[in-house]
Image (cartoon, rainbow, N blue to C red):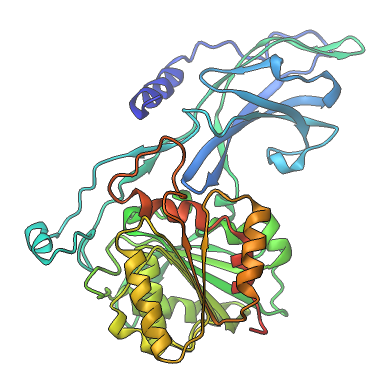
Length: 447
């Protein structure tokens, strides 16, 4: 379904204020619905509406539930189960919350609203003459090409027989709130840099069991130019670049702080120049290391496209600052990269990326001329986790400080997906941040 149709559908739901509530009328002793919350989850290509959590006035057991009891217009109900909270991870045999899981593959699941870029301060004729064709010059104010709709839905529920003479009456309920899984665990803050004078909004994840007596790593994620925005949480909603490190699964294995700055300007450009945000971001990381118990020997950086380019520029200027870097779909002037030849780098690009693929070929060649050992491999973007693990183990056996992986041509695209323009570029990070072995490698202390 086109985005316009989805937005029209949402507005239509909002206007139907006369929907009957499941909370009334009910018989004495019956259980009633109290509210419904929309649940979202971030995927490689952005945030999606994946469930509705309905809170009832009493417990509901798994045995009385089935998918046929619930309907959400335009969506596919995949599962229904009790939980102890509105978090789908809190599944239980019985609970006062029922999670109605929706297919993330539905046409209306994605909350992305695409728009044509409207960059400001950009000399398009000059840029075209240079043959660069990038999103703009470093420091240019830019507007994101994607915004995110608020998830809204009306849920219809059939009568549920709870047994023992109790029931939940049939009716309808609209979602009144939103829970964004993992995204809501980040704090939104602002850094006023006394050195550069810049003001930088940022998102910060603090480990839930943070203990100041212990020392923690920090991962800095920087978004691409397409996510440039004055909406602070935009970088969290566009993909997994920041989210993956803060997931409950990753935090259980590798607790860390996660920093995700939100830039409102182009931070790095195709002329291998950066804005003042390079120094501002470095200064922010230093300030956070002063404020929290962050191990300065375990600070990592990663980024996609422009964010990866900024990571390269940071490694060149401050080659001893980061313990490791994950560089995704990015390039730089190969004649400038010698200072990072001794750094730990994991580089990932698609062979369908017309800039990053030849760009990283030149960079890795230049690093080898400086004495760097580089392990190379071709992976398939459609591999399952076992195939990826096997390929990683083979690459890792070379014990190189720099790993260079390219996705084979065509493997980052979904079936029937357009391969025009920069799609091979953008699809790289749709896959990249879902690869756990790379995250494991980044965190190694003994490498």
